[in-house]
Every structure is written in C-alpha cells, then in structure tokens.
Length: 269
Figure: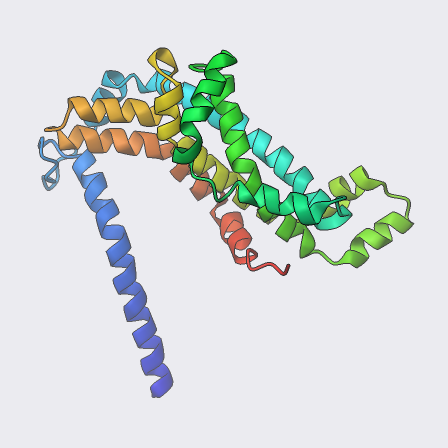
C-alpha cells in the first residue's frame, strides 16, 4: 500500500510541476494568437496574422539571417577549438597545463560587462565594429573556455585503455581523436552545440553595442519592435515566439541527445 501511495504522490508532484512550467508557455502562445491587443485569449479565435505582421514590421527576415550567420559561424568555431582543447587537456596532456588550464577557465568567470568598454575600443581600432566577423570572434572567445572545460571532462571520462590500444595499433594523435574519441563523446558535443547555439542566438548586449543598422540581430530587432508596440502585447508575444523558434526547433530535434549529454555531465575528473 505504501508503495502505491509513493507512486501516486510522485505522479501528483510531477503533474503539478508540469502545469507550473507549461502554464506560462501556454499563456504566452495564447497571447501571440489572440486578436485582442492586450493578449487576452478569445476562445475558438486564433489570429495567425499576428506572426505575419510581426515578421514584416520588425524585418525579421534580415535580422534572423544576420543572427543565423553569427550563430552558426561562432558555434562552429567554438566546437572545433573546444574539441581540440579538451582533447589536448583531457587525453594528451599539455605542457604547462597546470597553469594554462586555470587561465582558460578564468575566462568563464569574467563578465561581459567588465570587458565590454575596452573590447569596444580595441575592436574599433581594428575596424571590427559593426561587422559580423568582429562579433563572431567575440562569441568564439567567450564560448571557448566553457567548451574546453566541458569537452575535457567528456574526454577524461573515457577509459585510458582505449587510447593505449589505439596507440599500440599504430594510430596517431589525430586518428585517435577522429576514430576513437569523437564517436564516444558525441552526446557531449551535441549538448555543447545546443548550449552554444542558445547562448549565442539569445545574445542581446554584445549585438546592441557592436552592431547597428542592417547588421542588427534578431534579439535587437525584437527589442526595437517591442519598443514600438508597447500596447500591443499580442504582437510582442508573436515576435518573441518568432525569435525563440530556432532554439526550440533545434532542441526538439536533438532533445534525446541533449538529455543524455546532460546526464553524462556528471563526468569524473
């Protein structure tokens, strides 16, 4: 009897938590589809045109193209450098790693606000302000410390006997990485990809400071759009869903690998 009560209590708690999490999401979607300016849902009436108006008025076509370009390039750079760095620190052993690794991890502790002013003047002197390569470089630099930390832990979780066997079979450093290590840490790479994509796509502060005009990103365009429609909550909600859509779609596609990668995040050091 106690076992049944425990199961029932568990499901009740999970149901309550699910409602608490999903209710705000449902309310936001309902507001985006509402014909009412204040976003109050009207039963049986769905105003899909809100998304069309938001898309055209905020010029999301241009802004999301810019965001996708920045995000895809930055995430690709982060993954490559993080994988190489994590493999070096986690498997090969880097000369002076007791000093280098803490210095790299220190990059995770420095806030954007602390470096944004000198970074802006440095990039302006190099002619990299209001350019996509400049912002891509910033995102790569800010994402690599966490990426190396994450991938180092993933590589260190693999048995050393695998690499010893591969080395005895004549595999070189690159071959061991490509054929032995990468297939086994694929969930960790997928998780890092999703996290990096989400963080880069959702960036507002760096894009606001370094980009303007035709180079503004989707988050900045959303902020400008919402500033013009403060009294039209249904349009603001529709614009918010448009900007959030790429992250949501990517998560739905890779959710299983993302969860397995997060569960494997309790990796041994």
